[in-house]
Amino acid sequence: MSKLYYTAPTDAIFENVKECSAAIWRTLGDEQAYAEEKISRIKDIGNVRDNLMYMVSMFDQNNQEMLSQMICDDARAAIRERLIDGGANKETINF
Image 1 (cartoon, rainbow, N blue to C red):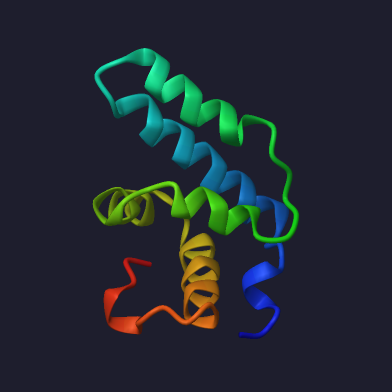
Image 2 (cartoon, rainbow, N blue to C red; image 1 turned 30 degrees about the vertical axis):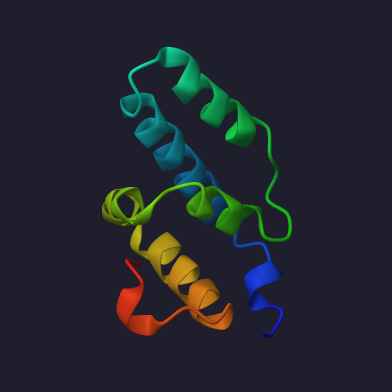
């Protein structure tokens, strides 16, 4: 594994994924506390190291697909590159 997985993306990409992730969490779970707990985990995280991938990894495959459809093309490419760098099978990547 190279260093890409642990390299922060541009601030624009990070903020795009952060906003879309929070939007998805607001729609999930029967209890508002569930969504609030997830949102609180990402609310104040900064764009350092692998925090982009941390946000992505919080979702299951179905919700990663939803996230992929919501984020900008640059963010989708940045995540895909990092997943491949981390050893993910290219055929199973939603991004």
